[in-house]
Image (tube, rainbow, N blue to C red; front, side, top):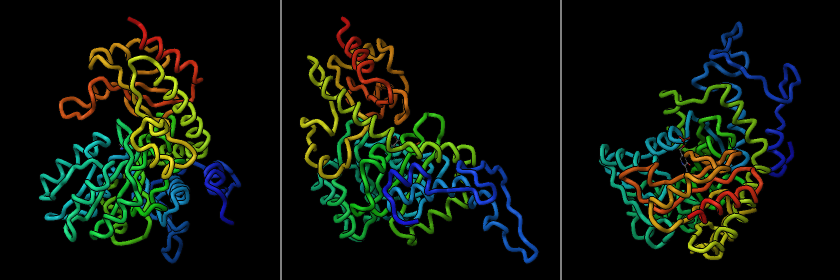
Length: 379
Ligand SMILES: *Cc1c(COP(=O)(O)O)cnc(C)c1O
């Protein structure tokens, strides 16, 4: 098909029509194994579901196109995707640069992995491009890992600048773009080598699928090793989950555009309340607002955080008073979630104690605002 815009290919799931039935929603193929013909060639090209099966393959095609990558692989979770990518690249003696502030699960896993396997790790402030430049070691740094906007304070990484720094040192740049989504951030176009998503979040979008994804700029040696690990270890997505992911991606743009618009409006209105500080890349008060305007397209995302003041106790009291916002972890679903990150992360947290993380869903902006304002203003 002629090249169309991302909104079009997402909505049509690459115009996938089942050749056997004409179905415009793909059939769910549960078969784990696929027959061969008389000359022992696979009838439909597929052999076994740990290699590939129709629904995950279809989701991979859509995501590769959305990110502008050479290929994509879908995994059983975001963590399976991230850990596979990182393990595929690093060997004992290598060095990796990663963000101090990022998704908690990635940071704790990476720290333990590097300690066990003799990989040197520098956790740096990725918002500070000079800090990244100072941390890379030419020839020894194999990976720079970034997350933008980054949990739970929504700092940005200047991807074009960090890609140049990584490549000059002989390293690769991998980007956790879960929060950026293909709607707002295009890491591969900015020079990244690999994009990772927790597809559990915005891509699937309905808090009912656990999934992960990797998209590569080039089908290179790193990618071959990633594919080998997924095949050998089996962290694949089942067909029903892959179907739900594929369905979710069809509405990615309308969901994320609305979520971003609501998040932006909430950020402005919450920032006007006395004693409340808001962290959101779309606000001029965000220290990297200029970078956000340059690097993000069509909005600033559906995630923001507020500081309630008064420490963890007050933050928890505010969260406990909300009626519209649901107290739960995760993000990117159609329902808005509020979370006290210090409670969620425990002792190893770097989150400020009075911070509440907000994942904005598809509810009416006034309901979300009034609920939070009442919770904040209640004595
Ligand atoms: C949720 C999340 C992950 C982990 O993904 P799972 O699907 O929960 O394994 C990684 N990075 C970010 C930014 C996330 O939000």
